[in-house]
Length: 193
Image (cartoon, rainbow, N blue to C red; front, side, top):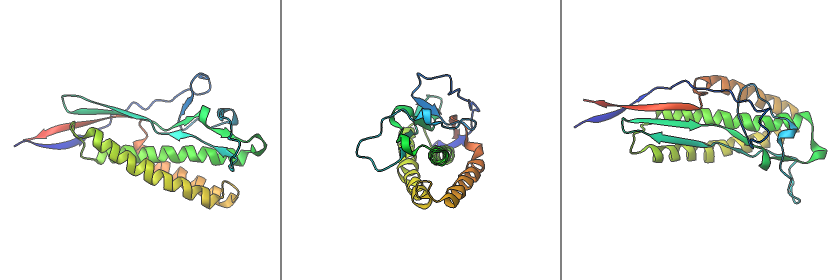
């Protein structure tokens, strides 16, 4: 009987995205050198809203399996301009920094997803189920809880000392997970004999 074991490796193809010249693009993909500006918030605030701003963030991913046992995964954290909004009278640098950190938290969670994928027992047959399970755990679970805790502890940027603590904590965590910054990875399988 042949046993399959996961042999993980990363094909390094981290790419920087040029955001400022791509006004037709509704998605801003997270990148260390790019920071949000109020002009990126192109949505319209709902009439019955209680928030000063909303960052609509997603983690789109896709994968392709190959008959030779490779699984290639593409995964990004992205800010969606047309669905993100700010109430004009509340625009200020502190609130913008608060919204940027929501985006940074999404990138942190994306890196944790990449780490989990590398460490998972992914096969050609279970790739879709494993991806969905990992995404559910991190995106619907950890991401949502972290975002809620961030808003509560910083009081939506009103508690400046807490906002600074969060900025520092997320920056440290991003550095800790720097090895998982790649947006494309290939997970390969090898047969044990």
